[in-house]
Each structure stands twice: as structure tokens, then as C-alpha cells.
Image (cartoon, rainbow, N blue to C red; front, side, top):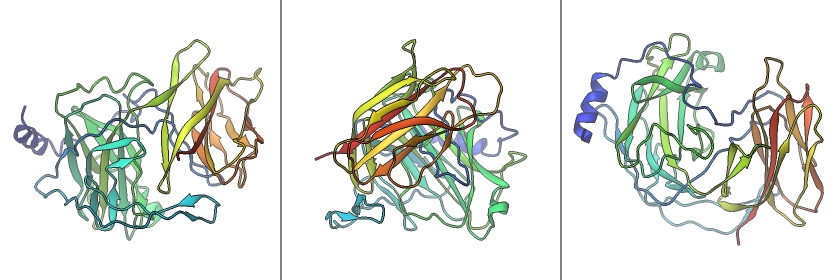
Length: 363
């Protein structure tokens, strides 16, 4: 099927979205994150990348794709933020998708944009079309509803459909406008760790449809001023986290980018977390700054109340995340202090794997 035929097919079925199945279908293996009001939002564990690829075709159901300009150079001089971490601006680059003061960057760390789109205000759906060169990808979709309250925005969501599966997965909508210019490169990572998205075929055109829907009925919805965005990033070099049997249970990026700086994975530790286990512990670098990613993966747990974890030894506010999630914490300095993964609330799961990974700045 060529792209013209594919566009016609998508247009024909644009309103087919019915009641969605469980949004977790087909995305087994991704590390889930949970937000609590008393905790800082946890970051996704699997935020990875590959070699450079061209930005994919966007079918916007009759609307032109946004222009992709290359911006002027800007200062790369390092500055220090209130958290003690260095930051610098990143200028627009060829391949960035830029619109309405928002941006999907063509490359973040080692992640490479293969298809990205920022919709018009009021546009309720669009499709991303690309030709995969890898089955290791992440999918991000955002939904912003200016003029609505948080409670009103919660009655809507954005879904991602693939291969005729309506509502392959979804995410909630936010009231207001994006707080930052750049959208994250990470997102949902379909497939088991290390295996990739098996429904993709390298060299065969693929597409996903991103659509605003009613959160209860999963039927297409329309909201004045709503703005949807979506992106596919190719994944690449990563380190696998394995359980005691040697089975991969999570994947960590080799490189994380934060505030314009690249941080490379230089040390990691993984081990069992269970009711009889000892806390997982490693040491911070002798000097800083650095990033530390910590998380848990739970397998085969019976139905019970989930536990919450935290990493002790961090400089700054202690944060917690639900089992099966993770966090990446910026640290302005390292002094060799111990970093320990502990249960902060509840009981440790009967079976699971915890990990701590250290990222230090590239020269």
C-alpha cells in the first residue's frame, strides 16, 4: 500500500474508534510510572534511541504538516539552575518539528525522531506515518485543553491506535497550555524489554492515529482550542536489567539528556526486592553533577496493596514511586555517599527486581 492509499484508508476509518480495549494490551514489558500528590512524577525507565532517521510523513486529515525550520544558533555557555545542576539552551536544528512556540526535537540524547506532529488548535485527530528501520521505538502523545479546569480536562483523554486496534493505549489530558517549550522524547515503549515492538516490520510502512476521545465512552470528542501532539522516536543503545533467572525485565538508555547536557550510563546495580531481601545499595560518584535512575519491576505478584519505594541518600527532597515505576533524580554533587533503594510504604512484593543506575556528564 502506498502513502496515498494509506491516507485514503485512514480518512475512511477516521471515525471508527469505538469502545477501547484495555489500554495496556500490547504494551507488556514497559515500566509503568505512578504519580502521587506528595511525590515528584516518576520518569519512564525505557527512554532510548538509535541512529539518525528521517522525520516521518504526517497525515493530518486534510491539514498541512507544520514547517520544520532550522533556528538560529544560541549560546552554549553553561549556567547553574536553582537545583545546582548545569543547564543551557538548545537551538532549533534541522529535523525539529516546531509550531506555536512548541517543539519536538529531532534528536534528544541518542533518541531520534522518526515522525512527529503538533496539531492545530481544535484539531481532534491526526495520523503519524513512517517506515520503520527498527522495531525499538517509543510513542508519545500529549493533549492540552486551554480554558478547562483540571476536573473538566479529566473527562477527556488522547488515544493512540495502531493496526486497526482502537485505543492501543491512551493518556490523560492536561488543562491549560504546555509549561515548557520542548516535548519529551520518551513515551510508551511497546513490547518486552530487549525484543522491541513485534507488530512492526522493518521496511514496511506503519502508522498510528492519535485522537481526542471522551474518557468514559472512548468516542471521538471535540473541544474548542484543544491541541494534540504526537511523536515516534527510534530507540537504540541501551542496557538491559535482568532478574535472577537472567530474563530481561527493563531497559535503561545509555544516554540521558537533561537541560542541554548529555549524561552517560557509567554504573548500575540490580538485584531482587522481596520480603526477605536486603536493600539494594550503591555509592554515588566522588564528584558531581550526576543523574541517578532507580526503579523496580515486579513479576508474578498476587493481588495486594502495592508498595511504594524511594531512594535514600539523595540531596534534596525525597520522592516516592509505586512499585513497577522509577524516577530519575538530578544530583548537583557526588561525594561517594551511599544510595539505598528501600520500601517507603507498604510491604515489599514477593517477587521483583530493583535497580540503581548512575549517569555522569559526557566531556
